[in-house]
Image 1 (cartoon, helix red, strand yellow):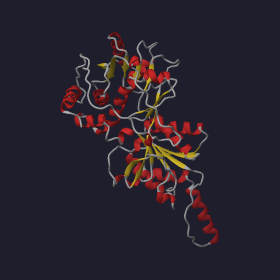
Image 2 (cartoon, rainbow, N blue to C red):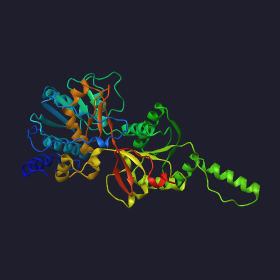
Image 3 (tube, rainbow, N blue to C red):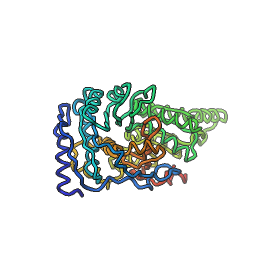
Image 4 (cartoon, rainbow, N blue to C red):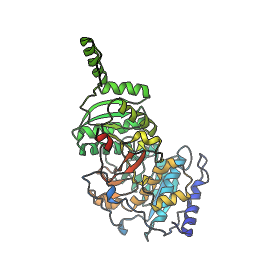
Length: 428
């Protein structure tokens, strides 16, 4: 638990953001955040939650005082439709800041990026920032990524629509990309021996992006996509899934045989046998409709992999019972109830629960602020964090490997080792 003085500091800081979560939010960013040392340092997830069976425990780099920036600028939207997202990221960032035990905490100056992110970046440069974190919106990152050069290193909190034609020095990219989750699911499926996959996505852009990333990675690893179907409505999905699993052909063969024999036969349709796993990029509500359909369509023994979108973080064993057996990757933050940063946010934040992922993003942005130079020098090193295991890629992107969990009796359970099917299905 936080002591009273620490709680007061957090309440004072976060109140600047929480006075209004709507479009008229105003945050006083004229003064840099005071340097306060209190509480234990944020803890990294323990190695037993490493998602890949062949992955070595991530090495946590020691801090190097020489490489840590002394002045950091945080670019977040403080007005408009993205103000609440900006507040959530800011909450996570400053909660991690005040939980740090470092004796050399940097000065933080916050800038409003809602109008012109490129102008906010330049203002931060003029004010002497040594590292600039943000913005969180794609439009802002797109503009900054098109600048001819970046005088001061920038850690964006999302990714541009298109990567710069030529590598942009000092441009680091970090975010909660659904593409990372899709690629991770593909790698895990191949590690578990599944080389033939069926994909289920929805018309939503985020679902399509995840599905495409899965398919690309899966095929690059030598896997085969045996089919793809779209979930728009339950009736249409049931019909489409039946077709892609060749159940209609099985029924047609049975009908022809009965006609030839002139008698009614006891018959169970047989699905195609060349699908070794199913990847779904859907919401919890959609997943609760899809999984029972798989059972009805004789596909209940096929392992189902999903992304974090399948679990909202809300515990509801009754509703989620239909998701039993589904494997999904997700942020360690979701299950890390003992995280002091998460506890501090829960006590002081007025952000809606839906912004929990952005809290984790903000917390990790602070953690990365003192590690970027080190990661650049040792690119093979990985860091355990709230959003996953982080590694800096050659193009400046920070790629995440999330932990794995599985629905069992309606509850999401974190896994130390990924197991494909639930025991009941495995025994059928």
